[in-house]
Amino acid sequence: MARELTARFRYNAALPIAAFVALCGTVPLTVAGWPFAFVLLIPFAVLVWGWRAGVDVRAGRLVVRWPVGSRTIEPADIRGFTITHRRVSAVLAGDRTVWLPSVPGTRVPVLAEALGLQVAGAEEDGDADDGGPAGSAAPDDTAGQTTDGDGAASDGAAPAPGSRRSAQTS
Image (cartoon, rainbow, N blue to C red):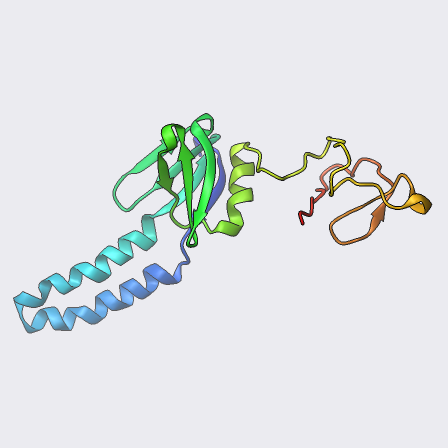
Protein backbone atom coordinates (compact mmCIF):
# COMPACT_ATOMS: atom_id res chain seq x y z
CA MET A 1 0.00 0.00 0.00
CA ALA A 2 1.49 3.32 -1.05
CA ARG A 3 0.01 5.42 1.74
CA GLU A 4 0.03 4.35 5.37
CA LEU A 5 -3.47 4.13 6.89
CA THR A 6 -3.41 5.07 10.58
CA ALA A 7 -7.11 5.35 11.42
CA ARG A 8 -10.34 4.68 9.56
CA PHE A 9 -13.89 5.74 10.44
CA ARG A 10 -16.83 4.34 8.47
CA TYR A 11 -20.55 3.91 8.94
CA ASN A 12 -21.86 0.52 9.98
CA ALA A 13 -21.92 -2.01 7.12
CA ALA A 14 -25.63 -2.53 7.74
CA LEU A 15 -26.36 0.85 6.09
CA PRO A 16 -25.27 -0.05 2.53
CA ILE A 17 -26.69 -3.57 2.92
CA ALA A 18 -30.10 -2.20 3.92
CA ALA A 19 -29.93 0.30 1.05
CA PHE A 20 -29.21 -2.54 -1.39
CA VAL A 21 -32.21 -4.50 -0.10
CA ALA A 22 -34.36 -1.37 -0.48
CA LEU A 23 -33.00 -0.90 -3.99
CA CYS A 24 -34.03 -4.45 -4.88
CA GLY A 25 -37.45 -3.77 -3.37
CA THR A 26 -38.04 -0.68 -5.51
CA VAL A 27 -37.40 -2.48 -8.81
CA PRO A 28 -40.98 -3.88 -9.04
CA LEU A 29 -42.37 -0.39 -8.46
CA THR A 30 -40.22 0.92 -11.29
CA VAL A 31 -41.40 -1.86 -13.60
CA ALA A 32 -45.01 -0.79 -12.91
CA GLY A 33 -44.44 2.47 -14.75
CA TRP A 34 -41.72 4.87 -15.81
CA PRO A 35 -43.00 7.76 -13.60
CA PHE A 36 -41.84 5.73 -10.58
CA ALA A 37 -38.25 5.42 -11.85
CA PHE A 38 -37.07 8.30 -9.62
CA VAL A 39 -37.82 6.11 -6.58
CA LEU A 40 -34.70 4.08 -7.44
CA LEU A 41 -32.55 7.14 -6.78
CA ILE A 42 -33.28 7.26 -3.05
CA PRO A 43 -31.95 3.82 -2.04
CA PHE A 44 -29.13 4.18 -4.58
CA ALA A 45 -28.03 7.46 -2.97
CA VAL A 46 -28.12 5.88 0.50
CA LEU A 47 -26.12 2.91 -0.81
CA VAL A 48 -23.40 5.17 -2.24
CA TRP A 49 -23.38 7.31 0.94
CA GLY A 50 -23.00 4.31 3.25
CA TRP A 51 -20.32 2.75 1.07
CA ARG A 52 -18.16 5.81 0.41
CA ALA A 53 -18.56 8.40 3.22
CA GLY A 54 -16.04 8.37 6.04
CA VAL A 55 -12.80 9.71 7.45
CA ASP A 56 -9.27 8.33 7.09
CA VAL A 57 -5.97 9.36 8.59
CA ARG A 58 -3.39 8.61 5.90
CA ALA A 59 0.28 9.57 6.13
CA GLY A 60 -0.48 12.01 8.95
CA ARG A 61 -3.24 13.83 7.03
CA LEU A 62 -6.98 13.87 7.57
CA VAL A 63 -8.89 12.64 4.49
CA VAL A 64 -12.63 13.36 4.57
CA ARG A 65 -14.57 11.28 2.03
CA TRP A 66 -18.05 12.13 0.79
CA PRO A 67 -20.11 10.22 -1.80
CA VAL A 68 -18.73 12.53 -4.48
CA GLY A 69 -15.16 13.70 -3.87
CA SER A 70 -12.86 13.98 -0.90
CA ARG A 71 -10.84 16.60 0.94
CA THR A 72 -7.38 16.35 2.52
CA ILE A 73 -6.68 18.48 5.58
CA GLU A 74 -3.25 19.00 7.13
CA PRO A 75 -3.10 18.59 10.93
CA ALA A 76 -1.48 22.04 11.23
CA ASP A 77 -4.67 23.57 9.79
CA ILE A 78 -6.90 22.01 12.48
CA ARG A 79 -7.56 24.28 15.46
CA GLY A 80 -9.87 21.85 17.25
CA PHE A 81 -12.96 19.68 17.07
CA THR A 82 -16.56 20.49 17.96
CA ILE A 83 -19.29 18.03 18.87
CA THR A 84 -22.86 19.22 18.38
CA HIS A 85 -25.89 16.98 18.33
CA ARG A 86 -23.73 13.85 17.89
CA ARG A 87 -21.94 15.38 14.89
CA VAL A 88 -18.20 15.98 14.95
CA SER A 89 -16.65 18.83 12.99
CA ALA A 90 -13.05 19.94 12.58
CA VAL A 91 -12.52 23.65 13.20
CA LEU A 92 -10.04 25.10 10.72
CA ALA A 93 -8.30 28.47 10.45
CA GLY A 94 -10.73 31.35 10.04
CA ASP A 95 -13.33 29.45 12.13
CA ARG A 96 -14.38 27.36 9.13
CA THR A 97 -15.74 23.95 10.03
CA VAL A 98 -15.68 20.69 8.11
CA TRP A 99 -18.15 18.00 9.11
CA LEU A 100 -16.49 14.62 9.67
CA PRO A 101 -18.97 11.92 8.58
CA SER A 102 -19.02 8.65 10.54
CA VAL A 103 -16.87 9.97 13.43
CA PRO A 104 -18.73 9.55 16.74
CA GLY A 105 -18.01 12.03 19.53
CA THR A 106 -16.57 9.30 21.73
CA ARG A 107 -13.82 8.59 19.18
CA VAL A 108 -12.43 12.14 18.91
CA PRO A 109 -9.44 11.32 21.18
CA VAL A 110 -8.55 8.40 18.87
CA LEU A 111 -8.77 10.68 15.84
CA ALA A 112 -6.65 13.37 17.51
CA GLU A 113 -4.02 10.83 18.56
CA ALA A 114 -3.83 9.42 15.03
CA LEU A 115 -3.25 12.96 13.71
CA GLY A 116 -0.65 13.68 16.38
CA LEU A 117 -2.79 16.37 18.01
CA GLN A 118 -3.21 16.83 21.74
CA VAL A 119 -6.68 16.72 23.26
CA ALA A 120 -7.38 19.44 25.83
CA GLY A 121 -7.43 18.01 29.33
CA ALA A 122 -5.36 14.93 28.45
CA GLU A 123 -2.20 14.31 30.43
CA GLU A 124 1.11 13.51 28.75
CA ASP A 125 2.87 10.36 30.01
CA GLY A 126 6.13 12.12 30.89
CA ASP A 127 4.68 15.29 32.44
CA ALA A 128 4.84 15.86 36.17
CA ASP A 129 2.23 18.56 36.58
CA ASP A 130 1.85 21.00 39.43
CA GLY A 131 -0.43 18.84 41.55
CA GLY A 132 -3.59 18.85 39.48
CA PRO A 133 -6.34 16.30 40.02
CA ALA A 134 -4.76 13.51 37.94
CA GLY A 135 -1.32 13.70 39.59
CA SER A 136 -2.19 14.88 43.09
CA ALA A 137 -0.54 13.20 46.01
CA ALA A 138 -2.52 11.10 48.44
CA PRO A 139 -2.65 11.74 52.23
CA ASP A 140 0.57 11.62 54.30
CA ASP A 141 0.51 7.88 55.06
CA THR A 142 0.85 7.16 51.34
CA ALA A 143 3.18 10.00 50.42
CA GLY A 144 4.82 9.58 47.03
CA GLN A 145 1.95 7.53 45.62
CA THR A 146 -0.68 8.61 43.13
CA THR A 147 -3.94 7.05 42.18
CA ASP A 148 -4.83 6.04 38.66
CA GLY A 149 -8.28 6.22 37.05
CA ASP A 150 -9.63 3.06 38.75
CA GLY A 151 -8.48 4.02 42.24
CA ALA A 152 -5.44 1.71 42.50
CA ALA A 153 -2.37 3.29 44.03
CA SER A 154 0.94 3.31 42.21
CA ASP A 155 4.38 4.29 43.47
CA GLY A 156 4.79 7.13 40.97
CA ALA A 157 7.29 5.20 38.85
CA ALA A 158 7.21 5.54 35.11
CA PRO A 159 4.70 3.27 33.38
CA ALA A 160 5.91 0.18 31.58
CA PRO A 161 6.67 0.60 27.89
CA GLY A 162 3.54 0.17 25.81
CA SER A 163 1.17 0.83 28.71
CA ARG A 164 -1.05 3.89 28.83
CA ARG A 165 -1.78 6.10 31.80
CA SER A 166 -5.30 7.50 31.78
CA ALA A 167 -6.19 10.87 33.25
CA GLN A 168 -9.54 11.06 34.97
CA THR A 169 -11.28 14.43 34.85
CA SER A 170 -13.86 15.55 37.35
